[in-house]
Image (tube, rainbow, N blue to C red; front, side, top):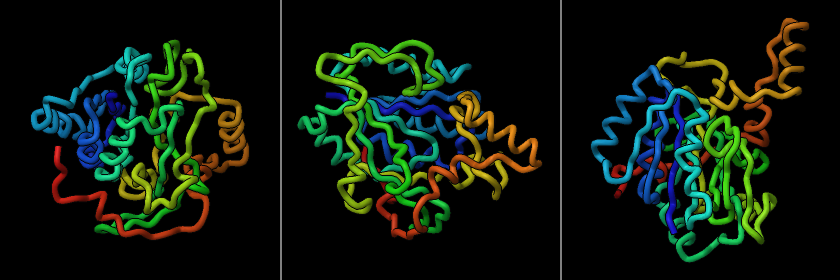
Length: 265
């Protein structure tokens, strides 16, 4: 069994080093697809690649679709794929424990596994304030590639879109939500999702959360109607991150486990 991390980034120089350092120890390989970054993202990636050349692979891509090609060949192999974004800071010790469970065969009957999330509005020192999942959705991405024969076709980015052909005994509804079974503070698979904070030095310190690559490329009738409504009423369309990641009360946690002084690789 292998655990492979895949990250698609574009202008993520604020948190990307921490995001990679926390996820890399649990992964056999870690792939980063850098999509035309113009801030210090490329500089940070090159520095990390020198340090972890045995496991960290950096690819410069022109189109976000190319990021899926980097993992497509794992379909049908004994591989779990962990999708990590530049605004996702995982508990490194928790991921190591999760890795041991995966090696032992835990969750092998599932196609997707979801972890716990704290959608962070404020991060000061080792204290974070935000909204938990549940009631918010969990945006964690852990896929069992041994459950599929193929994942091909048009993909807007890695792990999004396309056509999945499942092996016998598996189907798309085999989804396990660990965040519904344990509280966030007890989970091994848990994440600080800093989606409401600035992610690039090119962004203003305050303002609406920016769109991801998927946000700018994906389009549906609901988004089109919201934009039209905003134009007609002279008001901005609803921010979907507020709608999905700001549910439930604000809670505060001590999060020093996510910011260890050293991370053993």
